[in-house]
Length: 228
Picture 1 (cartoon, one colour):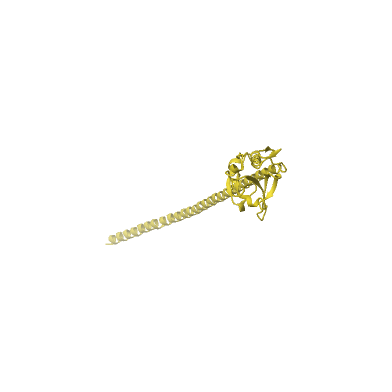
Picture 2: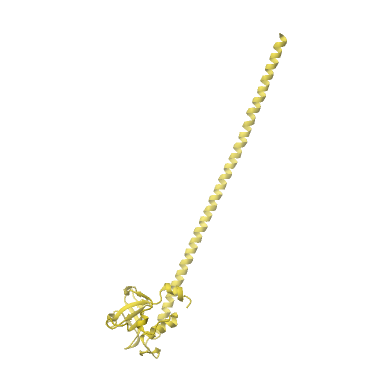
C-alpha cells in the first residue's frame, strides 16, 4: 500500500514538472517572436515612409523642371516673336526710307528712273529694291496683288489705289504714316508735282480712293522675306 501511494506521488510530481516545462516553452517562444516581428514591421514602416517621401520629392522635382522648361520655352518663343516683329518693322521702315529718297523726282509717264518715274514704276522699284518683291508694271495689275485691307486698318507700307469715278484703277501710292486718329498719308508719283506725300483726306485724292492692299504682312514676311 505504501509503495503504491509513493508511486502515485512520484507520477504526479513528474506530470506537474512536465507541464511546467511545456508551459515555459509555449509562452516564452511566441513572445520573443512577436517582439522581433513588431520591430521588423516598425522598420519596414519607416522604410516605406522614406520611400514615399523620396518618390514625392522626385515627382516634385520633375514637376518643377517641367514648369521651368515650359517657362523657358514660352520666353524663347516670346523673344523670337518680338525679334520677328522688330525685323518686320525695320523692313517697312527701310522700304519707306527708300520711297522718301525719291521725293522731288519728276513724274514721267512710262519713266522708271530717278530722272523721271510714274506711279506704278515708283512702287515696283521701291518694293523690288528693298523687299525683293516683284510687282506688275501697271497700277491696275498691282491692284490684283496682296491682301485687301479696310481703310481703318491701314498700316505703313500698304498700297492705296485710286481711279477716276468707277473706272479702271489708274493710280497707286504707298502708305507713309497713320496717326493716332487714323489720318493716313501716302507717298506717290503725282503727275502734277512728281514724287510727293499727300493725305487721304485731301479734297482731290480722297474722293478718288478705292481700296487698299497689303503686299507684305508680318506673316508673309516671316515666311518669305525674313532673310532679305
